[in-house]
Image 1 (cartoon, rainbow, N blue to C red):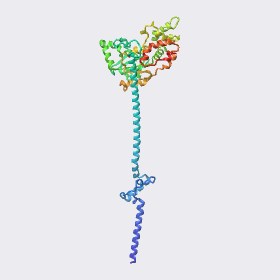
Image 2 (tube, helix red, strand yellow):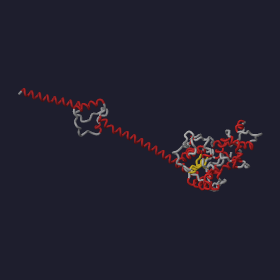
Image 3 (cartoon, rainbow, N blue to C red):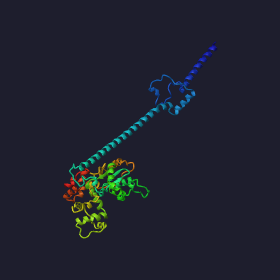
Image 4 (cartoon, helix red, strand yellow):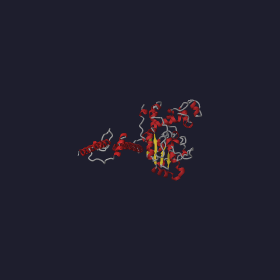
Length: 421
C-alpha cells in the first residue's frame, strides 16, 4: 500500500508539474492571449473600443511561433490592416480638399471671365450708343456726311473697308491705330498671301512681313466691288453690311495726329517729303533758295518740316482738303463712315490687348490665331502739352474743330489742357 500511495502522489505531482509547464509554455508563445499581438508603442487597438467578448480561434504552436517571430522584426499584419483605412481615408480627405480648391479656383476664374465679358459687353454697348447719339444729332456736332445714306458714298471713299468672305468679317482700317497687325490678321484669315518658306498661306500673323500687308492687292475692299461685281456691287455691299461682323479700332485724335507726323517726318521718307514735306517747307518754312531734291539731302542739311508747319498746312483754307488729308491723318469718320456702317465692335488702341482678345472670340477665330504682340506705339496723351507748346492757342482750337467729330463719336474727352493753356 505504501508503494502504491507513493506512486499516486508521484503521478499527481508529475501531472501538476506537466500542467504547470504547459501553462508556462503556452503563455510564452501567446496561446492563451486573448488579444492579437500588438506593436508595443500603440498597445491593443481593442483597448480603445472596450473588451472583447469572444476569443478568436486558437492557433497551433507552430503558427503561434511564426506569428511571434514576425512580431519581433516588423509591425504585425493586424496592426497594419487596422491603420490602412485611416491612412487611406486621410489621403482621400486631402484629395477631396485639393479637388474642392481646384473647383473653387476654376469657379473664381470663370466668374472673373464672366465679369470681364460683362464689362466688355457693357463697354461695347456704350461705345455704339455714343456713335448713334452723335450721328442722330443729339450732341449738336455737325460734320460732312453725317446724314448721307450709304448708297451716296463714292466708291473711292470705301477703300478702307476690308472684306473676308470666308469668316464673314468686315474691318475698317485706320492708319496709326494698330492697322498693320490687324491687316496681318486679315491676311491670315483670308489666306491671301503665300509664305515663301512653306509654299502655303500664312497661318501666324506675326510671321507676315509688315511691309507687305499694306499692298492693296492683298485685300478685297468695298472700293473694288464695282470692278468685281459691276451693277450688283451696291446690293452685295448692303447684304454683307447686314450679315457680316464689322469692326474698327480708334485712338485719341490728337495723339494719332502726333503719331502720324512723327512717323512720316521723324525719319527719311521720300514719298512724304515729295508730296507733303516740301510743300510745307516752301509755304511756311521761309526757306531761301531751292529745296533739296531728295529727303536724304534734306535730312543731311537739317531741313525738315516742324509740327507747327504741319498743323498750319492742315488748317490752310487755300489747300485742297482732299489731297491734304492723307489717310494717316484723315479723320476716322471720313475713313470708316460710322454713321452709315453700324459697327458691331469698336476697339480702342488704349485698351488694345483686352479688346483684341474679346474681338477674336466674338469673331469665333480665337482658336485659329492670336493677335500679334508687336511693339506698341509710344506716343501717349501725356505728350500733347509738349507737342502743342509752340502752336498758338487759336490754331489749337481750329485744329480741334477739325477733329471734333472723332472726339465726340468715339468718346474721347476734350483736351482742355491743350485748348485753354
